[in-house]
Length: 416
Image (tube, rainbow, N blue to C red; front, top):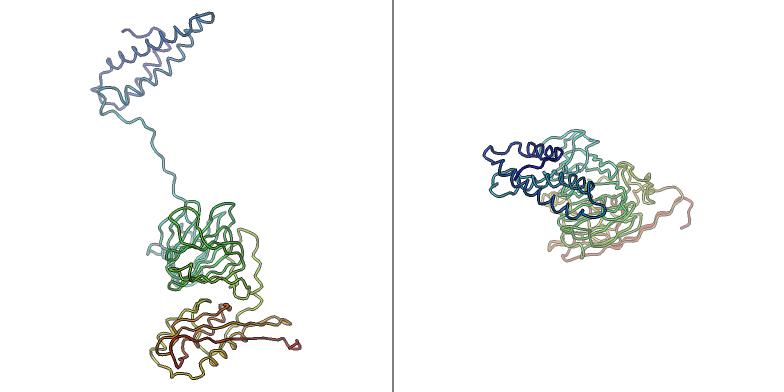
């Protein structure tokens, strides 16, 4: 079989052979490839000529065949080089797969305190970029992380968290400590989430704070909406929808059975400015009742959640060192302590503050408090103030005890 005489087609064949043959083993029989290629082209020419016969045939038919032959030649060379008979060692002509770089979790834009920031156990500095899988530890310092256009978050001092998802929504899992974030709202799906031992706080756009102490989780929601539920393997979180303002408490291992939500602004922790990717923050009405510089001479337990009241390690150690005697008037002692903590709060002028709550205390056999909670919840700083007294006081019996607490603060000259 001789080669086609059309110089344009011949040029296409020669150039295609030179390009596609680059790097192939020298053992390839090019004459055999040429023969098979030209045979296919001749067959295609005859077919095209037959189809083009008629009133509009003639020279146009030859032009049409010449143009189509170039495409056929390229396809034929691909077929012969990549998968032709006897070619078992030729290079693959599949297009290479280009992997898009993984999205970053964010950039460290602020470090406050004299401690250190560790990422995967190694010291990190301002400007560090966080990625999927990174374990972040804040030792004696709080760290601000910015994800431009999406969120800004603060990892408080003493926090250990891991970045578990970065594509689309950012998800961090907290081992201990607290994260506060301002999140840009999204139209659908979730923009941010915090996981704690299988439970998830999923954010659609909000300002919130999530704290973990053991398996206890406290969520303060100042604006927006969150969903509290089991962390799904994929997809959106299904659970309880909570709207601001709200304070939620639950055990991460039994969320559905332990969840308590209060919408009274009095019990919601005031927000910390962590950036303003959305509208400027407006402090909730709870901010009118600010915690005082010092509540009492009693040592204050660090970071005691509002509901339930976790037993601080320092109180446990103090109890073991000096065993208190049983208090026959334990309910009265605790009631007076809680009211004193409430009275110590600063309140604005000409505002009457009235609170009615019940302190539920779970006791061990020796009369010591194992767990305590206020129903309805009280402000976090009132919890922190009262916790040392609650856990130091020893009851005369085990089981449980309830302490009703009614408190009213009337401004000077106000109605009684």
